[in-house]
Image (cartoon, rainbow, N blue to C red; front, side, top):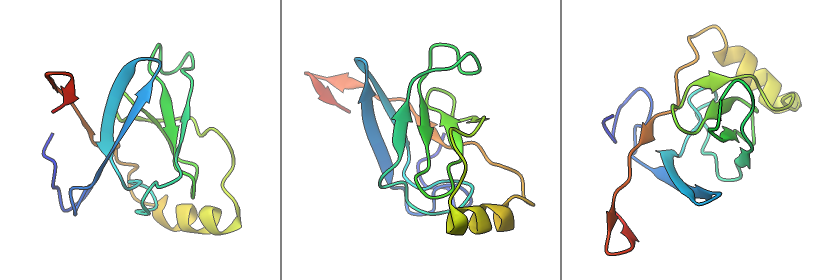
Length: 110
């Protein structure tokens, strides 16, 4: 997918995480609450995600499949402010989290 998309990743910022030897790259802001996921939590796979780990927004707790970016069952309930923000945005479609394929050049992520 395109790195800069005004609807889902307006500034082109990404996060890169390594989970059990696999590297994942995704848009740095939650598509639900639009807040940067600076303290997002990477979670183990569930039956819903198969063998793909999940990432949970630290603010609204929307949870995504790290391989596909699809919204999956939330890992936990949002706090008061996160719940309010999530409620405001829940009327709109829950967009998938943009995910990006990474390459390897001489041992460096490319």
